[in-house]
Image (tube, rainbow, N blue to C red; front, side, top):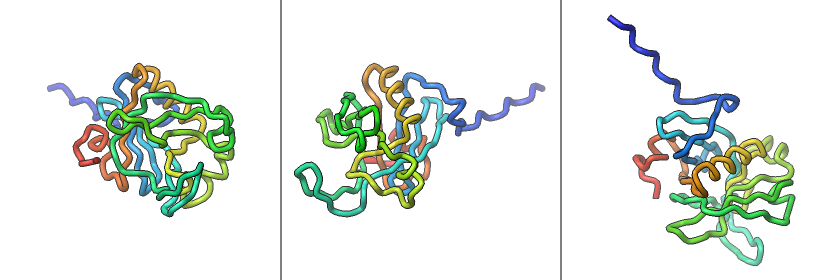
Length: 171
């Protein structure tokens, strides 16, 4: 009788992660943790910084800076001139809701060590902030998926794989 194969571990170390077509991103805005997930359920986790849980006035608008809970798509990439807010590269992966462009996105921050060492990491004006190495991976994932990346932001994620594939009720 053959011995059953050992189950594939779901979490993959960052150093072993390889981008695949169909990868999806889940962001837990409660724990400030991101999950990039393959179609087969394997994933890599990484720290993120999300929106401040308070009202702010920024770029001429006043609003609640808590990162919204919803399903999005990254459908465009911009290069921003503000190299502090958007990091040395200025890369900004814009989030779309129901096909419409929003002010939200995924980007780096120039002083990432300070941003990610400080706790809690509710520091952004509503966007999702990632470290440079993860921004490189997300940008490549967006490109491999022909200019589209599915994203879910949710406050508290018990099962990132189910959340990525619409099982756990993200809105």
